[in-house]
Amino acid sequence: MKVISITPRGFCYGVVDAVEIAKRVAADPSTPRPIYILGQLVHNRHMVERLAQYGVISLENTSSRLELLETIDHGTVIFTAHGVSPAVKARAREKGLNCVDTTCPDVEKTHVLIRRLVADGYDILYIGRKGHPEPEGAIGEAPDHVYLIQDAQDLERLVLPQTEKLAVTTQTTLSRWDTDALIERIRARYPGVQVHTEICQATQLRQEAAVRQSADADAVFVVGDLHSSNSNRLVDVVREQAHRPVYLIDSVHDIRPEMLEGVHTVAVTAGSSTPSDITREVIRFLQAYEPATTTQPA
Image 1 (cartoon, rainbow, N blue to C red):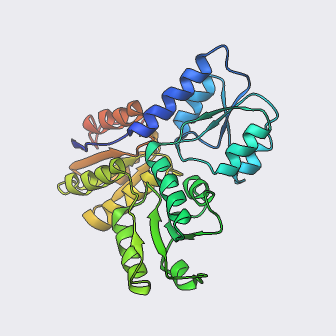
Image 2 (image 1 turned 30 degrees about the vertical axis):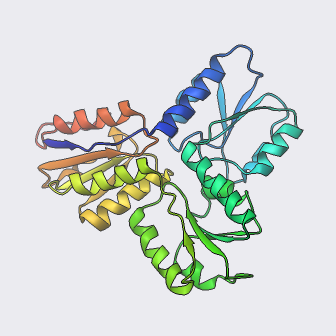
Image 3 (image 1 turned 60 degrees about the vertical axis):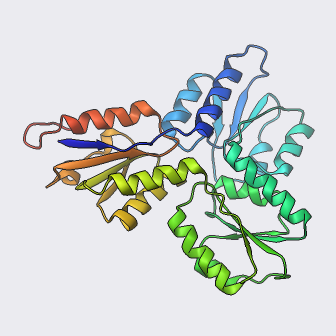
């Protein structure tokens, strides 16, 4: 089968930095134990399992980061690449924990922007996904002045204390197409709003490459975790902008024969938190795939 290996794809620099920091902390014998991460360092189960081999414990449930922090009594806490609120950092220091911050520089830029805008008297409409850790950390910079907007319905329900000084910021991992549409709605309702599109360049480049390079494919595979925001957005943009059948798979083991029926050319990309070897395994399998002879991975 012909395979189009979409580039760029996979790990972004923020993920690379976060993973390397966590490994370095775990390898240092002077690091206070146990070593915890508030949530998943990056949203990929393979990466979580690999970090566990280094003795790094990922605390995962539906609780807020502040609630997760209360389950830790001693040791080291790693803040994820998605960023955390000032309240989480302050509480960790109060508890005497050794703190390691792996916040992505692009996320940190958004936190700095929020602090500056609020200091200048602005209220902020933050476009992001409910339940995702990145909005939790960003909104935590000024919870009384930042309003989470996920879709047009949220905008319609919004009641603001003032509309003279409004600004828009965004979660870094969203689709630019989705955010552009929502920003236009916001501008129509609040013509004087100040807009800051904070989608990171790595995310945008991967989305644009996926749309452009999948044009000649009969189907597209996005390799990524089901809970990864950027992986899910890749699926959305391929489906909505390239109009191609697209599948989000965790690994080669998720590929089924029915996905490849009538397919002669397939394109492969990966979320920015997906380890490269997982994607390479998918590509190798598809390159060797012959519908009449190839057996599925065990």
